[in-house]
Length: 146
Ligand SMILES: [Zn+2]
Image (cartoon, rainbow, N blue to C red):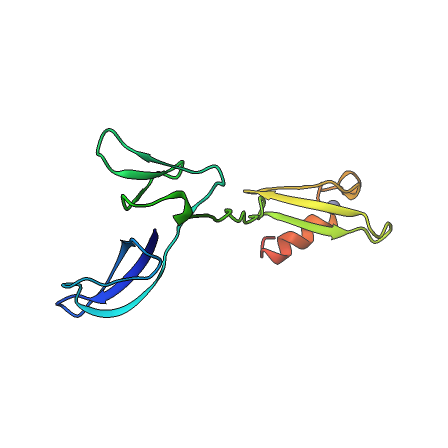
């Protein structure tokens, strides 16, 4: 009927958390559970709304699929909630600098650094005798490279 996250103190005085099942929506605590600390309704979390429950013929344990989390045998689909995975965007390039063009505001030039190689997509690269535009020089200065 309901799953509970049950916390108590074991004989060593350490917190012990376990998931227990109750036939009713109220929690009844049996004997031998040690000093009671707290209990709250518990739901297993699934990454996908298309989850299911399956008892493995290999080990006889009940699993939440497709996450393959072992659940207590009494678990029903009502004990599972769908928590979508939040995607975090990680910048792909660390060695990249953007410079706004002074002659064309809103236009950005990009400097890439890869080892000792610098690249810039501005037209200044072609004009510079040493092949280094002011953007590349600025990046090198920032990185303390002469
Ligand atoms: Zn440049």
